[in-house]
Image (cartoon, rainbow, N blue to C red):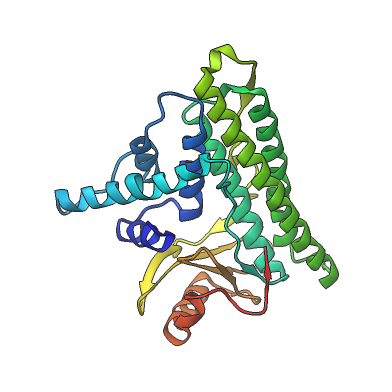
Length: 294
């Protein structure tokens, strides 16, 4: 089950949870030392607590088979230390808008992993190494989320060299986050095998995206997942009180395309997204060229 196939299903059933967040919730739940983890519960939560309506039983079975037997099982392979998990990389230019989109995505991914790990619990006992790794992820999350208001505030000038350096820092943070996520996975795997009650555990508390991600950002009602000319993308339009509307289009491979200029209205931003899908659909079928891997 590829990411593109999963995205197509999320689009068909109007899933309010983005693919990058769902991926990390699945991975966190797979890693969790809890013995009551249910893949179906995580799937239901992606739609706000219950599955969408289906036209037939076959449609329901198709979705469940794809997400549980396909996507979930593929992510489960990262429990093998020889196939460690790596946060998806896309091509990102060192521009203010592209870095803003990357910071938001990374903070949401890290919060999604912890959401899956903790499930419905605010606190839980974790093996010591997993606890330490979760603390590292909390620091990484705070750094990515903390960059959001600085990048949104265009009243403060930022030199190009500073943007270049921020991109390099984001790349380093992603590597650190990869290492911490894999430490959680392996530590909790050992805990389940040995029974966690016989191990040294530390009380750990979850962090959430809501704690620091939003920063009073205003999201357009026009935001949606759309398929046009055979291309499926997520259209994200947002602003804060001091900026015009920012347009970000995320393709099925997870690549983020952020416009360098802003729009006076959200409708103008949405119209531009539709124009790009009509006139330049190939731009959303492959990674943008001439950029740096984040």
